[in-house]
Length: 123
Image (cartoon, rainbow, N blue to C red):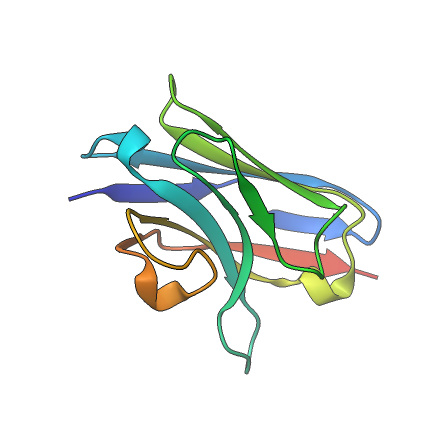
């Protein structure tokens, strides 16, 4: 059983930056690809970014490509999401998730989820 705990959310002005962290425990971190999803009020959960087990491959939603960067630190069992040039459209609860096999873009393929962290971008 893998536990995921997100941190780093908060209130930021448009154009600003935040770095989200997701600490994993209870499993072998290197066995899992990691992803970030987000859900805004009244909307479905959507894919944001993912990184493979070895960190050799990264994946991004078109809406965040070039602004967000996903990375992982195996020594700390942590995955990060660096978010730059934030806009109001980025306001959402951000979730970290882990999976071993499947389609990185599909939330139903992920095995474990964190509780989420709120990101609010003010204009």
